[in-house]
Image 1: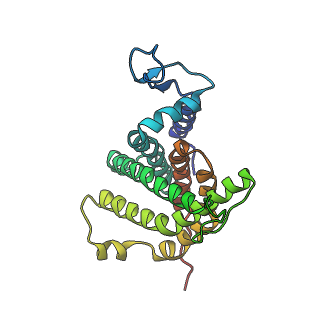
Image 2: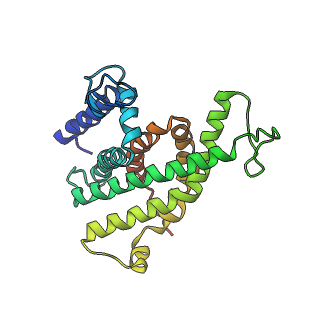
Image 3: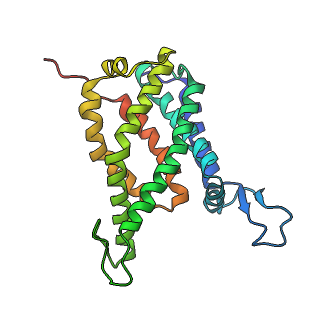
Length: 249
């Protein structure tokens, strides 16, 4: 693959996005907790090493808007990486529509992560009346770090088994509609997909990559989970780019 000037801008974009998050210059203030504030809401505080904390405060108050932007901006970049890997060009057909679709999925991730995170978390709590763990998912560790990691693994396991593959397949449907510039019937869409990839390769990637990767995601504070998932969408673009070809009969 030949080097192109667009590759430099791609690296700059990724680094700029990361720096903006790490040194996030806005923070959400609650005037009811700080009477010296004139107004409640997002305020410019300048770039600082408290950026991640500032970022978390804004995400906590605006989960859907931030989910839309986080996933939309990074996952669309993943789409461009996929196109670059396949065609050698950064030019991506239907780029704006794909950004909108990824943004909507970012809002969906916000809901899904909360459902799985809080659901699995509630199953792993101790019954204070009896001192016994939940009989539904009876795993509990006294060490806080071990418990956090295992809860992250448990959440990742069930989220990926239930949510991951349908999410990827439904996103592929919308991507195909955008590329073909029309809505497709379910039968037509399923006939057009690479059955080796979707019936084998991506299923294996859930076990080998996505469950371990999202174990890290779900071990993080809730306000940073969708951001981590957005970064992982770059990996999805890479995985789809290097998808294996069918073996010769």
